[in-house]
Image 1 (cartoon, rainbow, N blue to C red):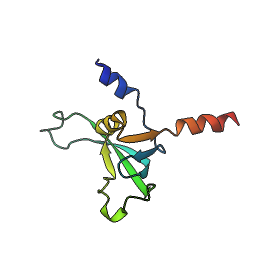
Image 2: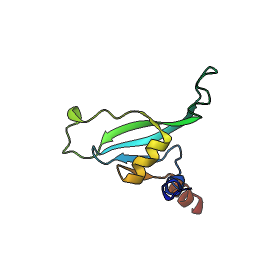
Image 3: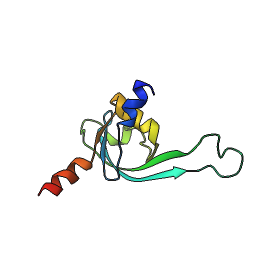
Length: 106
């Protein structure tokens, strides 16, 4: 296993996590993880099982960026590419796991 693979494996995503797309300032919430299984005999093993995340993009926190000129943010992202964007710093990831741990301490 390469160092990059180890780093990406440590990024654990959960429903309810908050993400911020740094270039535009849009905030998103991870809504659903789902698996895309290619149908049919041909191609069913070609790509393997791909996982995707459905994201609800909420609003632009950077008021300097005109929303009308902001790039389209896809509401569905492939998991490995999404993790790579987090690793590279293009997207900030805030896990809801830390919030659950605090709630359990009360």
